[in-house]
Length: 323
Image (cartoon, rainbow, N blue to C red; front, side, top):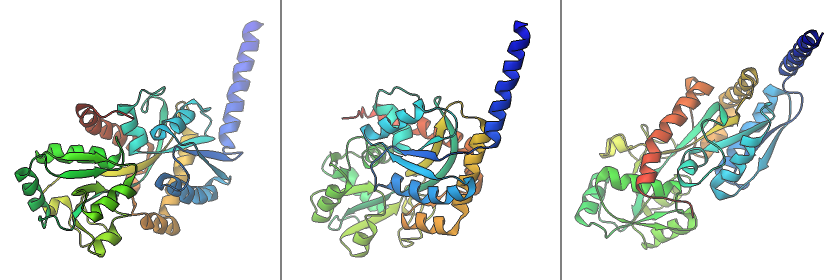
């Protein structure tokens, strides 16, 4: 008798789970943005969520949970129910760097199911306008001839410009001082004023200054030139081949989320990324959408692991820790 009851209960549980999966989603979905409203991750989440609801037929709620380099919001996502109603948009900082500089309550690989890669933003190597080097090769030569004399601005300890500066130093076998600021804005102000020599950072806030002649641009750290600034050469063209730096975004859900639910979310994201209005808005943010074949959960998983293998040794060798 007990065995029969157990069998009936198991069948009912399976039936309920199947029915829930078939009707997914049946209520609003929350996307956690682990940063404050108004930033790059927040903007991308809001653009893509507006289009995702067309495919899913349910509202998407954006919840900003900022703090500790994104780790508070990501931790909330890791603890959420794996039912497909909570997702998190993460980036290179919150899903790669954070695990190397913070002591976390979650594992960025094992505690999440990948959903899709969204887009990536290359960085630009720039300098004060009075720096004597006129191209990237001359810049590297100047740095080698002036060891420990140059200064490179960074938008905070452990941020992209800091880690990219460390990597540039390693790859070019040069030595310089890295100066951390409280954000990119103050660092760029000092670059324009000639108080620091170099920065490696995102193009959005730089291009107008480059066009106005207030700073020099040496190269974009990508395989192809930027549509927004086609006159800036790539690192391959400028003499530092393979020096690719990018701040990318993806979407994850808690570990254990059913595969068909992950598939539904992935379909909604793929549909959104194919929408011309979404693509136009991403271009406004200097974001390059990943090719369709890289928008799968499997591609995000492989890409994420490769980024960890590349950057964790660099960060740990440099002794970078969260402050």
